[in-house]
Amino acid sequence: MAVRAVRGAVQLERDESGHMDDQVRLLLTAILERNALAADDLISIWFTATPDLHSDFPAAAARGLGMADVPLLCAQELDVQGALPRVVRILAHVESDLPRSEITHVYLGAAAALRKDIAQ
Image 1 (cartoon, rainbow, N blue to C red):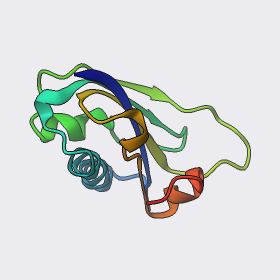
Image 2: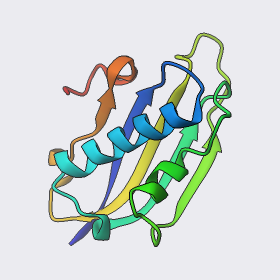
Image 3: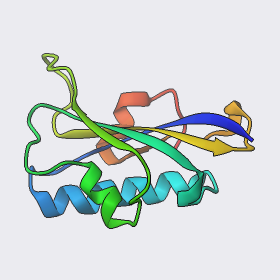
């Protein structure tokens, strides 16, 4: 079993705790499903949020999905002029038998513009 990194992002429509929770849960669920992962395969997850998001911690959504024993960390994304606003990014470290080339990174909605090189 290898350690792999899985990336993902979602752009929120608004800075509201319930909306953030819904969107981050959707992103986490998509990452797990598209990579045939279970919660037990997760090693850790880093969350970043753009500076315009401050209604909640993105990691709270993972806790709501039952990821109580997975180490989670939130940080603020760099405040770069012209960057896509209201974005939550995820970097998950997982155990997987998939080769690196078969890991599916998930960019939902308008966040797909962040990685046009990755087919969704």
